[in-house]
Amino acid sequence: MASEEVTEPQQEEEKILPAAVRAKIERNRQRALMLRQARLACRPYPTGEGMSTVKPPSRIVDSGGGFFIEEEQTEEKPVENVVHQPGPVLEFDYLICEECGKDFMDSYLSNHFDLAVCDACRDSEEKHKLITRTEAKKEYLLKDCDIDKREPVLKFILKKNPHNSQWGDMKLYLKLQIVKRSLEVWDTEEALEEAKEARVDNRNKMKQKRFDKKVKGKVQSCGWYINSYFMGERTLANEKRMQNYGGCKYLCVKVLLRAYI
Image 1 (cartoon, rainbow, N blue to C red):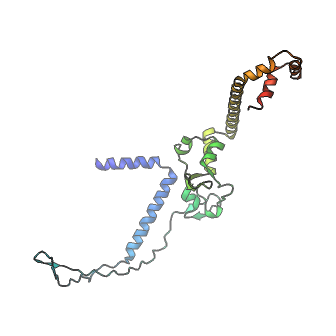
Image 2 (cartoon, one colour):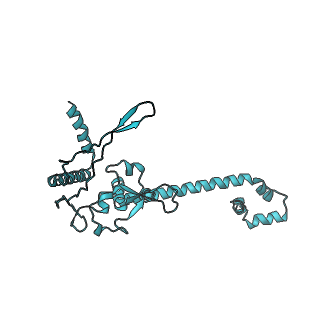
Image 3 (cartoon, rainbow, N blue to C red):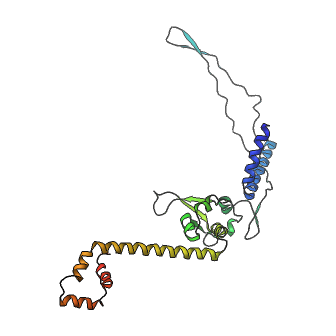
């Protein structure tokens, strides 16, 4: 029963891990086993036979309390330099580059982003460019759950913030994987562009509402000035003012508020 309880969580963890991660774990395990077997076969370490600890005679030491004690001394065994022989060359399960089709053991993209691309084919300027988390969320309309919780979870690297070293580290993601994740969320590029346009329209509407609210507050705060401008004594000067603004009080309000907004 105990063995079944131990194996069941392991099987559940194997089901949760992606196939690429499980394959990489298995390659590393096989590599470690083969290296261990090769080193055990060579046995470069000394067996320690024929060596013994030299024990000198004990020395009498006055304890200062009215009696003597024997202090035992042991000579430390000299440490021998162990010469490690290089292990034999073994054949491993190599990865195949998605760009050139050649075999390789490891690379920057395979180690950090689980992408089977060798270092010779890595294009850090265009195809394999890195982008920040903020840019990924803004340009491709991704949420935190789309990046951190949707399987497979996107990998990233940490780098110091170039604007201020005291700020937190930046999370850099592979742009190729971000674009792929955005298509999984929005299905097509057209749907993503429509969502971007709708978000821009909503942002403009909110800006207009805030502006109108600000204008309304300014009008209420300086209403006494506008009323005195139009509702003062009915003189020839006031009549000319009304004629100059076409008799429209709202236009005059906009002109007067330029100094306040």
